[in-house]
Image (tube, rainbow, N blue to C red; front, side):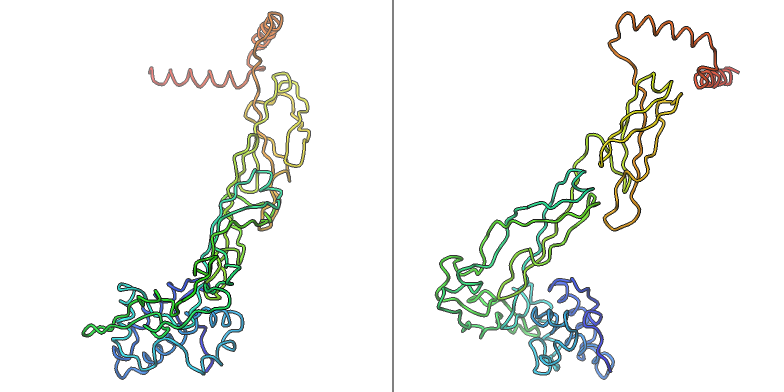
Length: 377
């Protein structure tokens, strides 16, 4: 019978952390352990299946091989046996491991490697950079592998030795009545090894705090909240473990002219009274340069004009958005005496023309009169 996917067995996702996998296994172990389900062959099979999946996925090296090659990448190692709970492990062993973290952590194998932590960087962009795309250099602090000892923590020419207290397990077991409790080894602090002659550069840590500079290629069309993942650019792993990832979170600054709405852009365009009344062409800015907008005669303030294809092409594909221009008729200010006189003459001519020159004004006054007649009756 073909083996089930290990992640499916544990009910886990491929990007789950080691802690997430441990929680999934504990839940299944408590539910299906043979000590809790005597004479239940189905439960025993599920327990063994979960145990096998956890033994592979909890080991960073085996997990990497499984992620790349599937069962073929780990079957040979599995045949030789692995760390973890034995097939015949008692219920007290499972129970002890469940509560082990309360007293100092869970089990570790002698060759445990640890993946580096993921990092997050908030990248602020101008609207033009987000829409058009750009390569930007960023700098951030991170833990990098020590160049002197290459991550071992030991002075060059020396090496770490197996801890004599825990025998390299990183844990010591204490029997407390019914419970079998594990604690982190007080000598090696859970590493399983001790360094007699630590590296002078990193003082035995194997990693150093450094500033890292990267060129981030921002794809065209990104928006607020989008995230760029840079694999392996997070903190360095330990004991040969893989590095974590860097997640670049996009934050777009507000723009003095444009407002973004998904793939569309919006802006306000002020026009003078004569252009609104007589019509004309006005120059409108776009992210690709200026274009001419034809304003028809008798345009009212608040009218919106649509310029197709002058918006944003979404980063995930699709049609390019549009630019919506909201026309605002600007009232003249700081007029001269001559201009004021001309405007008064013009206003008198408009008044003489009646409602045909001001249909909205006439309609509004009619609604106001109807309102007062209604409340006065």
